[in-house]
Amino acid sequence: MVLHAAGEPLRLEEVPDPVPQPGQVLLQVAACGVCRTDLHVIDGELPRPKLPLVPGHQIVGRTEDGRRLGVPWLGWTDGTCRYCLSGRENLCEAARFTGYDLDGGYAERVVADERYCLPIPDEYDDLQAAPLLCAGLIGYRSLRLAGDPERLGLYGFGASAHIVVQVARHEGRRVFGFVRPGDDAAAAFALELGCEWAGPSDEPGPEELDAAIIFAPAGELVPAALRALARGGVVVCAGIHMSDVPSFPYELLWHERVVRSVANLTRRDGEEFLALAPRVPLRTEVEAFAIEQANEALDRLRRGRIRGAAVLRVD
Image 1 (cartoon, rainbow, N blue to C red):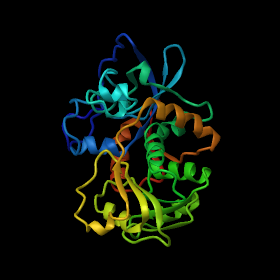
Image 2 (tube, helix red, strand yellow; image 1 turned 120 degrees about the vertical axis):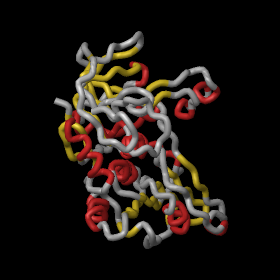
Image 3 (cartoon, rainbow, N blue to C red; image 1 turned 30 degrees about the vertical axis):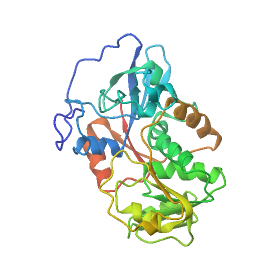
C-alpha cells in the first residue's frame, strides 16, 4: 500500500521486491500495526516523508533463515553524534524512521537494519505482537518518564493506553482513564482493563493525579491534565504530533508541576519492554484487516472507531 501524496488514499500496487544491503535483513511481513503516527504522515501533519512511501512501523516478519523479528519506528541512527554516544539515540538528528524515511510494513516484504530489529516473544502470535512495537513501546517509555506515580491518569484510551494500563496495574499503580466526552464505549473498555475510574477528559477525575500521560493528539488536553495534577506532578505528552497547546495561567504549572514530551524510542526500551510483556502478562486486543483494507483501517482509527489496536494481516 503506497502513499504518493499527503492527503491521498493509499494505493495497492505491485512494486519490486526490496533488496537488502549489507547489514540489512529481508523480512516476509506477517502483520503490521496501524498507528496514529501513520495517520499523521498520511494526512500531511508530519513534514517531509519519503515519497512515494510504504507506511507502517509496527512490523512482525520472518527472515529467510526463519527468525521472527519486529521492526519498530526507529530504523537507523548514526551512532556517532552526542545523543547516540550518551545513550539517547532516540534524539539523533540524523535518525531515519520506518514508514517515514524508510519504506515500512504495509507490504509483503520489507528490508530493515538488523541492528534495530527486535526478537518477538514466543508468547505472542503475529497479530498480537504488532501493537507492542510502537503502541506498547511508546507507552512504556512514557510511563518510565512519568516517574513513580501512585495515581496515574491516561488521556486517550486507544492502542497505547490499553497496553500501558496493564503495565501500570502490574506495578501496583492506581489508574484513571480519561476519554473523549460521551465515549461510553472507551470508558467501559478502560474499566475493563483495570482503571478504577473512567470519565470525560475535559474534567478532573475523582482524585488528584501524580502523573498524566496524554496519548491523544489534542493540545487542549495539556492544561486539562495540569488542572488534574497534584503538586509536583508530571504531564507526559506521548505523541509525535499534537495540535497547538493553548495558553494557560502560570498557576497551573506552579508548585513544581512538569510538562514534558516523549520522542521516539531506543533499542534498550524495546529490549526491556519485550522482556517485561510476557511477565505481566500483557494482552493486546486487536482488530485485524487485510492489507488491501489499509485505508479502511486508517479511517476507522481517524474516527476513533478501533477498540484496542488495528493490525494489517499480510497473508
